[in-house]
Image (cartoon, rainbow, N blue to C red; front, top):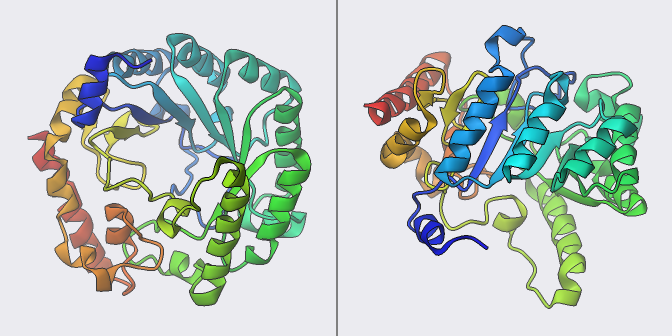
Length: 347
């Protein structure tokens, strides 16, 4: 049970109850739609094992108890299991975001025994042809399913996640059937996060109109079937698309730490608010009181007419997914505004 004092702080929005920790930017896939833009950065740009342990200690002391470990591809780090072990033994409820392609039977058993709450695994196609075209890695389809089966065999709680776009939408229902057959969960969303404002490549991949509605209806149907015995109302389109909370909680109850130790309000925000190599996490978190300044950097982006189909209630996606493509010069102005907002927060 959460202590009352901590519960009161959570209600007041003063505790980072949830944290996403990116332990590397490196990835063995090159997914066509990935907003993170994987980089072949050397390990020298990453936090050391001890620095990550220290960060976890600081986060725990701040009141964080839900931790998502991600990348890049987190399993690429040789100390990945050690980091998970430290987090689980510290008491965090740990979720791992992974493509599972590097998870074998031995690793799966260890992770499940450590108490990982959930494994969220990216699957982009029911067939090898579609999945590998999306992931841009030959052999990735067989590898991801080998990893998923290893996790299931070890007793892990697995949720398959599929970003639905023009080139794989026709296989989303089949992915769900494959998940059902294996006895694991599956969710899909048509939301694609842009890599910069007005990103034309991402906009070209997006499902729109009836094609997008079809994916929303599929997910809604799966949700209703899942909760039918619990007499729950089907979730709204916003909830299905991951934007169900009343207002943005980034910088008030959640935060994200990049692979280089920089702290962001969320994993979609382009401007950091501090560097854990230079300041304590406690000091950086205290500065988030001015986060609203960043979210108001472009009022026009927040107007209903400017919101792209899949922006929903996320201010940063709304800001970034402008329907009109921006020129390189205006993109620099936009990013400059966000950086200025972050500097204002840092004081």
